[in-house]
Length: 407
Image 1 (tube, rainbow, N blue to C red):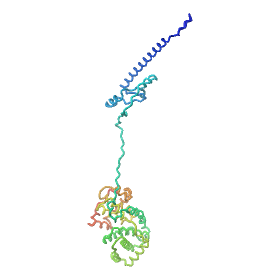
Image 2: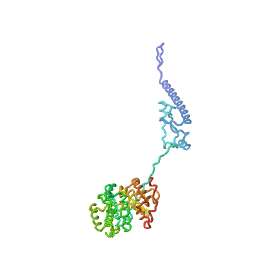
Image 3: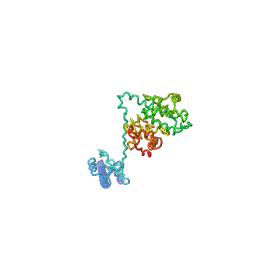
Image 4: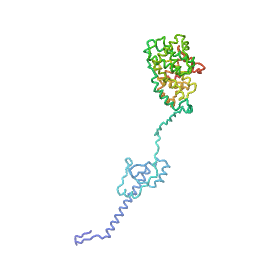
């Protein structure tokens, strides 16, 4: 609007002039925006060539200089245009509202794949150790058609044996209550009975039951020294009546004692022993466990004879009474395996059927190896002489597993 003070004439602008002014200002604004876009484009090109592409969200992408050539070509194919942005850890490019609106007019290209990231050569990938568990073998599968093997009940039988073996154990210090006996006398008696057992060619079960009856009886009743051999003979007689088909007669027992006792002495001691033990003769010994564990170990004849040799050495030694029968049997099998093969081994099948791990056997194993080392020395060499014959393959000459002593 134009106002003239002289003539008091007011001239109002026409509509055409107003439109021309608006058009002129709009063209000027567009030219300014184009100039800004051109400048920003130049800046973006400089940034791309020097540092990398800056995206709109404010994060700097992987530099094209650092990327492999193949990935640069893929990026060119997948991203025909890039949207400039800012925030490069200090070097920032800010866009005002008008530029942001202009940028929104061009939609951002969608990413067609995961962004490429180079693997750090110094980064180590930790792989978990893959351990393959050893399968537990079915050791009764081969006896499935053998009715005498009692495959259907064998697991229950040995579970019952493990429960009842506690009753067959005796206190490890029971010899303290014997006023006229000591550990050495017991060892002499059992060493002699092993030779008698071998001369009579009796079953192995008979020998282990004989020793068990002697220890259980001596742990409950005091015996004079001159009656100790009689206790051993009567225990052998009872074991024969329980295990053998053909039982030695009393006169034979009197004869092997060099007639130190009479028939009546044997019968009287038999009554005394049975009443003291309350006629409880049927208790598990080391032998049934030994047979079962040898089967679990799939032992050959040599390993079987060596295990029998080791466990009979343990029968003579008084200090071995503190180990349960099943533990002694498992240790004999383990020690025999290690001695024959020359290295430590205890399979998962043996551990499953014996219920003992290798660590649980080591204390008893060291004792057994020590007995093996000195089996041929000293006065009590009955077990060594027995197994140093062709009948047992001269297994007593086998060298002891010395490496188990330091295990």
